Image (cartoon, helix red, strand yellow):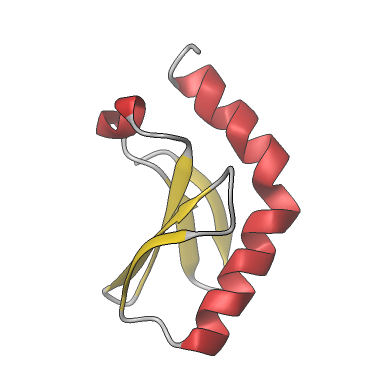
Length: 78
């Protein structure tokens, strides 16, 4: 999983097998995981994070969205 950001113990990244999905990040910490689409503020799934945590993760996603889309495109050569 290419890591895009480590922040407060949260690891933001994506998997190399994600190529044929829209750009997104997985956020992993302490056995919890969420998948967040980069083009929208939608959460694909959440496994274990509280609502306040998700709000913080979405804010961090918004802060880095443009750069992460570029990282996604570079990684998958799009």
